Length: 466
Image (tube, rainbow, N blue to C red; front, side, top):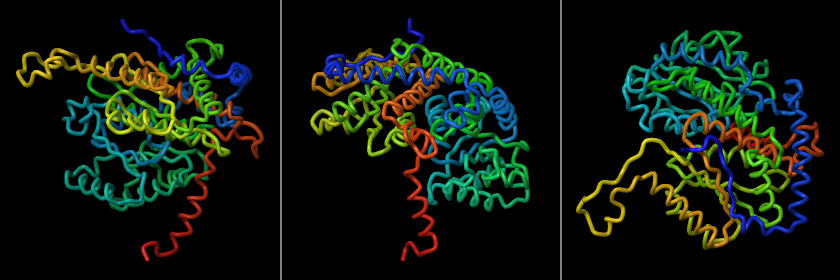
């Protein structure tokens, strides 16, 4: 029988080698951080918005959640295709949900096999036109362009990659009612271009899906940014409402665990932040290998943005390397063992991956293959994870494991919220909430991207290819 909660385990021999004084310093800081976060429990939402931490209550925004379910249920009847237009935090959570919960060959299934869900595609994250040309051409050739709902996501309503894509799509639709094929997810202020466009000519549903104040892109998975996609793609035997309920349940469980004592065994966010921080600050490890032991890269891509855009500030913070097992054992494992000793490894181990396959017996293929006959592939996956973790430990590579009982909506959403909370704690361990102009925590900003934006615009007026 599988456990019903997540577990965090570390290689104690390596992790226990830190000087006692260093560990006590971190533990004292964690106590103070925990008290600060505990004070938020009774704080008004406006205070969390000012502190850019309103994302911690996204799962409690009943009105927004109800709106998502109603719109998704209606749109599933009206459209055959869903295209998500966004970049970074605006689409990475939807990509995780698609990769984790939908059939791996979703778009090749019939509507009946998909349970009424639309085909799904992603765009708006680049200026390279290749895939956008291909997407629009394919939809036109199949007479699906005017049966497509385009969910454009940008809190600011000004994200250039996203808005440039929307301009191309508006031109391709070539219809006075083009805006009725657009659903906008954005901030509800006049600063947003999408907000202003909606006021002039309402988008689909005569409404906007809100990205609330205090909810940054990389923390927006459980706002309408991620939840609409999750509801829209409910599969056979599912409903949009059931999917959303499962997500909210998982996030709520993570939220409750985060409010336990900082050193409680179920408060994994504090344990994980402590582990990472000690290796970064005391042992000088500059890279975290996020080793998701499953056939999935999207969760790691989401975590790369979540961690590096939040924690790499003031010249500090580790880099995140996205890996998946055992695929990455055949690329980066050798470097982890034999290369620079600048890495720690965080495994994500799944106790149950879903329906399994068993290798046949008496195949007569070759005598060297007999030892594998009759084995379940999930058993082989677990053996591969255990062998890899043991190899790292035997070679002095620090590693820890987050064990997740099942790969389903509730547990993955719980895991994602846990990782968000880990970032919140890690940011405060680094002091990213202290001595900032304007008082905002650097953990929730990304000022490092502003130079790119300025330089990009300066080159628009010149001939880049000359």
